[in-house]
Amino acid sequence: MNLFNQVFNFANTSRLNISVSKMMLASAIFGLAFTSCSDEETVAPLEEQTTEISEVALSSEIDTAANVIGDVIISAYEAQESDELGRMASSDSGIPSCVTITLVAEQNYRQLTLDFGEEGCLVNGHLLRGQIVMSYTRNPEAQQVLLTYDLIDFYFNAKNVIGSKTLLKELSNENGNPQFTHTLDLTVIWPNGAQASREGLRIREWVEGFGSGIFSDNVFEVTGNWTTTFVNGNEHTYTVVTPLRREVICLYFVSGSVDVQRTNFGGTFDYGEGDCDNAATFTFNNGTEVDITLN
Image 1 (tube, rainbow, N blue to C red):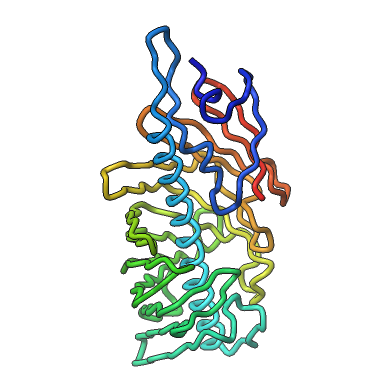
Image 2 (image 1 turned 120 degrees about the horizontal axis):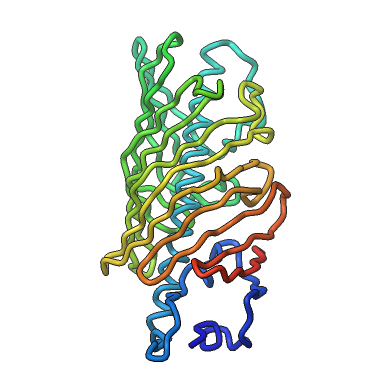
């Protein structure tokens, strides 16, 4: 039995074209409960399929929140280090003027409070509200710096994000590039009461733009693995297969792939070969490939 016929009302085909919104991040694909066909097989109820699609859509929103939180923390740290070293401040730091930054400096200890205000502040197209409090011990000679952060009454696009975790900065990895390892431990509560948690590791290698002081020329390659768990017990697991290349001037990852697994479903999501465009593909475990346009 062909699951696509029931969900999308399309004819049997080995390749489909689908257009989905950026915020859904291909949730119409990830949410399908794909199983092998047999004479006795039955298709999952439409209500169950809808629940799965909804959960993956929510999971993609957590991805976006985690990315932006990481961006802000890294940008604030790099700006503070530039100031400490007497470098000229850049107007393109990635942190807008609506963010109030308060510094507490005691010997080598540094605490930065990023206050986005009660009304919120627009950061890279997202409305942030509340505070991020980050701290670290400064040692210019150290090869690693551990950044600890707390989210205080923090909201990301109206979603309450709760978490206190770390980013470990390595001044130089095996490739000679700066690298941030983000330990993920976040809980997100949506305005409608939906709730999910995210645990895992996201490793960001800074491959271009380091030291320029210009946010817009930064390029990162992201690897890692993470799990999203919902209050009903459903889990989604993600493992980066090919590093996700993130050019901050582009709205989307320009290349890389992620292995996606959940109950009765799996496949690979691929962002392409390096073009800054809205084209991607998803390949199911049985080889069926789907073209995706991210709008």
